[in-house]
Structures are given as C-alpha cells and as structure tokens.
Image (cartoon, rainbow over all chains, first blue to last red; front, side, top):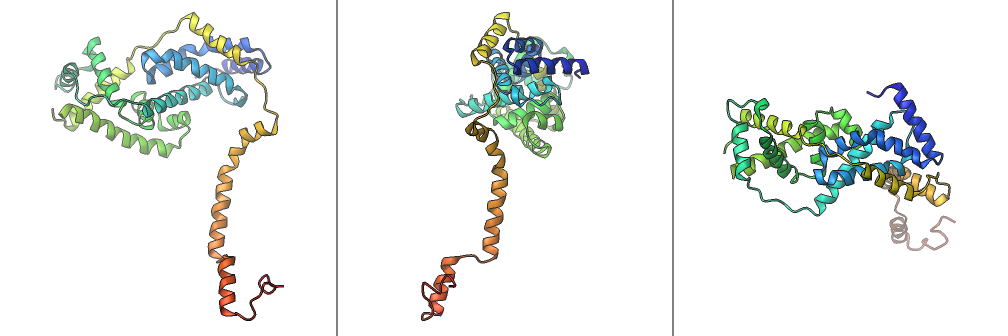
Length: 196
Length: 107
C-alpha cells in the first residue's frame, strides 16, 4: 500500500515532467522498474519482458497528461502494464502457431508426480517447476488473450475479481463469467493433452 | 491418463505454484538508459489545443450517446409509423384525383 508521502512525491514528479522536465521521468522509471518487471514478468515470456517493460514506460510517458492526481501513480502504471501485456498477447494470438497438443515425457512425468497420492508441493524440485511451467505455457498459449489475462490475474496471481476488472478495464461481472469459462477451457486443454 | 476432481485439483495447485515461482526478469542500467533515451526522443509533453486533436481525444466519448439517440429515433420512427414515401403512395392510390404535388405536402 503506497503511503501518503509516496503519493505526494510521485505527484510532484509527474507535475515536473508535465511542466517540461523530461529527465524527472527517470526518477519514476528507476523507482518502479522492479514493480513493472514483476508485473510484466508474470504475463510475458522471460526473453520479451525487457522490451514490454520498455513499452510500458513509454506508454506511461505518452499518457501522462491523462493522469488524474487522485490515486497513486503505481496503481495507474500497473494498469498500463497489464494492458500492455494484454496487447502483447492480442498481437501474438493473431500470428500464433499452435503447438503440438501432446505432452513431452518430462511433462507426463511431472503430472504423474503432481497427481500422486503422496504428493507434497513443498518437495517439488526446480526441474519439476520447469516442467510444470512448460505444461502451463503450452496450455495458456491456446487460450484467447482475454481468457489468458483473466486466468493469470485472478486464478494464478490471486487478485480479486474487482482488482482484475480495474486493471483490465472490464466489469466485475465480465471478469467472473470469463474466469469461469476460461478455467473450464484450461482444464479441457490440460486434461485433453494428457489423455491423448 | 484419466483425471478425477481430486487429482486435477492437485495438478492445479502444482501449476499455480510453478506460475508464482517463475523467474523474475532483471534489467541492466543500460535498459534504463535506453528507456530514457526513447522518452527524450519523444520531446516534452504538450496539451492538445487544435480542434482536430481535441476531437480526436474527446469525440469518441460521444459515440455511446450517439448510438442511444440513433436507437431511440429508430424506435420512434417505427412506433409512429413514420414512412413518408409509403404515406404518399398510399394517399395517391386512395385519392387519385386529389393527389397532387401541391396537396401532398399539405399546402
């Protein structure tokens, strides 16, 4: 939760940038690059995260005149970051290549271990995480950008429907409906690829 | 492999865990410099003042209101049976003698 002083500081910097002090924007870039990289890193492939984070700050600068000094700059920037990630997946979705539906042997092994009766998540090794991530990435790439974003925000990151709605600019009802449908789709994709 | 509710829930938990423990990207100072270089190349921000720019910025905000007006007008036209050509054709068929260009508009 940003403190009152932080908000005032950010607002002062934004005012300076709007007044023509472009270099002051560097203070915001330095302050929030970690946060933005964390947000972007959750949604975008590792090797693309730098470029997307770059775009987030450029878009933030270009939209700075629309910033209303009521809320926190961090929250405003997070909205831009999430929507930039959404745009990224929309572009990718148009030019996507559907991966083969069958899973690799490693992924099959991972699923067998993950669904075993004596499975304890804390004992998962690093390479198991990698297989899980690959399985998940393979499934997520088959979802539409809308389904993907809502699943990642609410289901995987644990945000509330209201928070996700605020970040995506959707209604809460829309988020809830889409979440329900996308969870079903994800299950179908994952079980479908493993039952083949 | 077949899934029941319980083992799919276990798999879901493992996937959520993997998602949350994804490696976070790091950036160098050079990245920060390249962002600032890009931003400087854009120049200082300026408020839009020309009518075209203002329309571009605010014009689309009237689109929902315009759509509502169009729907309302269409509804009214249908409800009031407002179809001048039909009315004129009907009038000239029903009253072929009185129908003239002068009488049509009600003069």
